Image: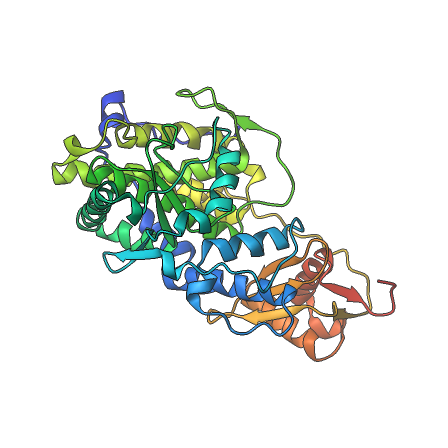
Length: 418
C-alpha cells in the first residue's frame, strides 16, 4: 500500500463537526484542473462531436440541448454501442420545466411524468429498490408541489448565501431537478445517475438544507462526471477491487469510490460553511454533513492504496484534496514502439479544437472512440491532417506523441494493412 500522509484530524468530534480550516478549497482545486467555463465548453464540444458521428449533417446544437440529460443519455448509449442514436427522437423538456432562482430548472408540467417515465424506470432499476418506479410531484399535485417549490427556492438561496463559490462551481452542472412524490420514493433522499448526466432526483424536501445538501452532493457527482469525460481520470481497464465503507455493508467498485470521495470532500467543505454561518442545527435528520470529512478521509486512505489504477488527473485530485504529497505521483513513460516509416491519421476521424488548444478526436467504430489531446499532440495531428509524415520529420519529442496515436489506433503506418 502506498504510504499515507496523515490527514485524520486529532479527534473524532473535530472530524464530525468539520472545523478544520486548513483543507484545500475544492473550487480552487477544480479550477486548477479545468476552469468552470472551459470545462462546460469542452463537455458540450464532446457531445456535439459525438452526435456528429451518428447524425449525418448534424447541425450546430444549442447549449440547452447539449446540456439536456435525455439527449446526453442517448448520445452516451450510442457511444457505448448499446442503443442506436435516433436523431429524430423528441427529448425536449422546455414545456415541462420551471426555472427557479434564475438558474435551476425543475420538472413541473403536467406531462413531466410521461416525458420522464423511461428515465425513472432506468434509474429505479439501477437503484435496486423494490416496487415500481417513483412518480414526480408536479403542478397537478397542487399545494404539495407548491410547498416543495417554496422549499427548493429557499434551499437554493441558502446554498448561494452560505457557500457562494461552491454554488457557482456546482450549479452549472445541474441541468434538471426532479422532485419525487414521497409516497412513491421508497425513502430515497437524493440520487443521480451517470446514465443521465445533469439530472438530480430528490425526495420532497422538508427544510431548505435538504435541498442545499442535495445540490452539493449530487452536484458534486455531476461535476465529477464532466471532469471524468474531459480529463485523465479512469482508464478503460476494469479494476475488480471493491471498497466497503465502515458505515455501510455496501461494496463499491473503483469508479464509485472515486466519485464518493469527491462528493464527501465537497460536502465537508459545505459543512464548514454551514457551521461558520451558525446554521448547522438547521440541517435535516438524514444529513451527511456532520460525517463528511471523516468519510472523505476513510475513502481517501483506501484510494491512496489503489491509486495506480487511477489516471494522472484523478491521482492529482485525490492527493490535493487530501493534502498529500503530489510529488509521489509518477508519470508513466510511454515506450516508443513505432516502426520507421510514414504515418497518417486514420480515415473519417473528426476533430474539434478547443479554445485552450486542446483537441478532441472522434473516430467511428463499434464502439466509437473519443480521445482528448493536449496542445502539443493537437499540433502533430493537424500536421497529419495535411499529409502523411515520416518519423524523421517529426523529431524525437513528437515521435512520443505519434506512439500514443498509434497505440490508440488513431494513426497508422502507410502501406500496412488496416
